[in-house]
Structure formats: C-alpha cells, structure tokens
Length: 75
Length: 293
Image (cartoon, rainbow over all chains, first blue to last red):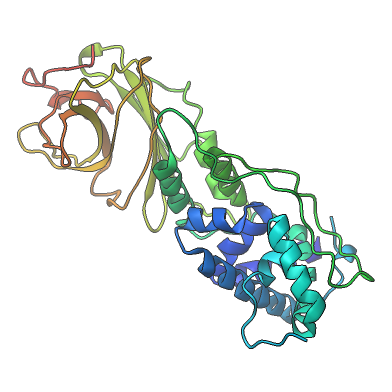
C-alpha cells in the first residue's frame, strides 16, 4: 500500500503530458497510433514523449526510494 | 555493433509492451546488436510494472477527457462504429534480459472501438466516473429540475472534483420530446453529453442545434452560443457528445432548436427542447415547432 502511494505520488509529479501518455499506454492499454489519435498529436511525438515520460517516472520513483524489482510490489 | 546518438523511437513502446508484434521483433533484432539500448531497456523495464502497482485514482490532466471525447465525436460515423484500435497480440519485453523476468500486470482488455477508448479514459480518473454515473438517462426526464453535482461519486483521493450538472430537457408546450444533458466542467472547457428521445428527424436541410443560453436570452434578442449540432435517427433518438469552452457562469442554460441548414445557425429556429422551468416564459406564440411533433 505504501508503494502504491509512492507510485501515485511519483505519477502526480510528472507533467500532464507525460502522465497522460503513460496512463493511456499502460493503464489504457492503447497502441501508440491510438494514443496519437486520442491526443491529436503525431505518432512520433507519442513515441518520444513516452520515452521521456518513462525516464521522468523512473527518476521520480528513485527520488522516492523505489528502485527496480517490481515483483516485490505487485498487487 | 550498432551505436547511435538518438534513442530509437520504439524503445519506450517496447518497454511499455505496446508495440505490435512485427515492431517488437524488429526492435529485438536491434537490441541484440546494441548494448546501449539493452542497458536502457534494462533500466526502464521495471517502470511499467510499477505503474501497475499504482492506484487508478491519480489525477488525469483536466482536459484529457474533453479531448478524448472530441476525438471520439470526430471519429463517429452515423452508420458504423469504425475501429479506432485494432486488436493486437499481447507482447511483452522479453528478449533483452532472459535471466530476469519482470512481472507485468494483467492487461487482458483489447479495445476495438472509440467507445471503449472513452471507457478507458473515463476509468483513469475518479472524477470522471461521474460522467458515466450521471449517464443514467432514464432518470429525471421531465422532472424540471437542475441537479448540480448531486450525482457525483463520493470524494475520492485524486478525484478531479470537476462539477457535473445534469439538466432535464422537455419540449415547450408539453410535447412528448424529451432529453437530458450532462455537463462536466473542467478548467479548460465543458464536455456536454446530450441524449434526446422522441425528437423526429429535423427535416431536409435542417438540423438540431444545442445551445448554451444566457439568462437574458429571448427569441427576438438571442443571447446564446452553439454547443453543437446533430440530427436524430428514424426512432427520434440521438446521443451526441460535444465539447465547448463557453463560460459556465455566462451561459447557465441549455436549449435545442431546429435550424435551417448552412454552417452557422441563425438563432431563429424554433425551440424544440428546453431546460425548465427557467425557459418557460420565453416560449411565446411566435415559436413555431417544426419537425418536433
């Protein structure tokens, strides 16, 4: 539960653009072309934004002391 | 050995597991030759699994829903629902580091329609659940009431808290046409879901226009802005969704009129639906109903 809160806090610290692309791709289970369609942005932007969003989330998690092995935290 | 300065565009999609199988295979071919990308995938591959650990109550950017519904509306076809997302095979990053397995949460859903995308986006934020919950259109038709926010779910962590207003729409002069409109106000704009029943098709060269209406609006001196236009099907039904940036405090009411064709409505068409009781006094004898009875 603590980790959930930390992950949510890390997500909330991202920019809106990063957060939405991650949520749509992971929780939304959308393909990148579909995300491009939903957000009305070019596919290439979705790809680069997804990469930077992953990087940003990784940093935000690390700042909160969450590193690596997700199997320990899996619900 | 492949080296490059820029990150390959498919790296993030690969880590997130959302490439199609062909793309994933191509990227894995690259991975086998590129220690730089292997290291990067290794570094990022835990992140999506942690995303699955998080709650779903993270606040979603306020206008994401509006943009999504706008896209859905743009994609809607009157006769068929085009697939927005093609079914695809499940793919998980697997080739980069066989020695380690990452548990990634189940993602069994495969979306095949714009409506499914809407459901997904709605599911992302607690606040927007209200849009669906107030979508129980069987409720309140003809009730002559404005229920502001009363259908919102209990406050949840991360809920956006955007107000939801549900208006019942009735026909002037006791016609049997009726409808309901749910308006969700975000920082950026309003998302308006309209459902109408027993409203005959508007007639050749005509369409229905849904308006936000100021309190001083009269037939001779209109004070209103267009939310969107629509037509009904043979059974008299329509369920359009619109977005608008109109100021909620400036235009607190909703009307539906029947307007002659063309790009810009003339603000002269007869009113066919209105939100009671505020609008009753405006329904004068000069308002002719056309295509409504």
